Length: 321
Image 1 (tube, rainbow, N blue to C red):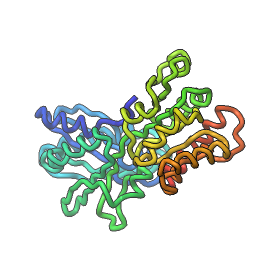
Image 2 (cartoon, rainbow, N blue to C red):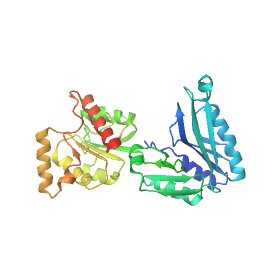
Image 3 (cartoon, rainbow, N blue to C red):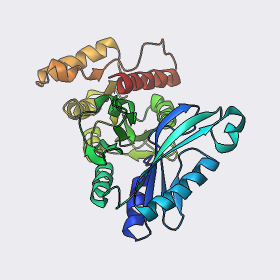
Image 4 (spheres, helix red, strand yellow):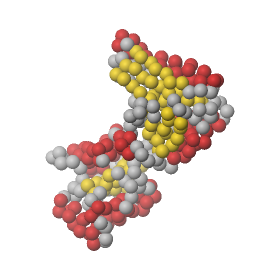
């Protein structure tokens, strides 16, 4: 399942189709707001909309401003403040304020820049759209915002003028070993926003009967991870504690950009794993990427509790580094 919102893609499509397109982006919030900073709405010149920046009447006002911006070819910075008494009616549940940047495509956001952004998103490359509305400077950046990329956090820089919109690929979790723990881990991972994929050459384990509706590759793990790719938005969890299944996938992951590697097994099992990998020439730094035994030590006993510990550790690594 692709959890990517497709607002920039729709904007580019509408613009190229001659409909006109305006991107509206939440750039700042105070108090309660139902949509986080970076959330987007796209409006066509025909009044079509996709996405959202809040709820209720705020969208209606943004659409009106967007149509006017498309006509005059200039950006607009909108601010909506809602009192507690009126908040619920317009989607700001407890009162609050939001600022929305409205930018017509073509006249404000260059088509080529938007096309490059869309291409990076489709290639699963983390990228930031950096804009200073006051100066008109707009650019894409792949470096320089490591904390924002890690935290999925768009927002203004300290100068209060430069807005950075983070476009991260969807999170993925590749789970090697369709075992009992995986039956709890996969649906829990999905709830946390991951697109999970099961990899197990044993068809009796990796079957739709045991994992209905899930994506399953009945490949050897090293072939599976090679086919899917290992990037900075991917977590790899190995649950077989069988060296002939786990080690080939581990060897690829240790030299990749995956943000998390977790391997099931006792302390003794992991020590043997480390010894095998050292004998194959892997460095301490590479082997140190492996979280083994997998998961935070929360006293897990059941498969579901082990799955919880894995996701807790994975989240800690993703958000805290």
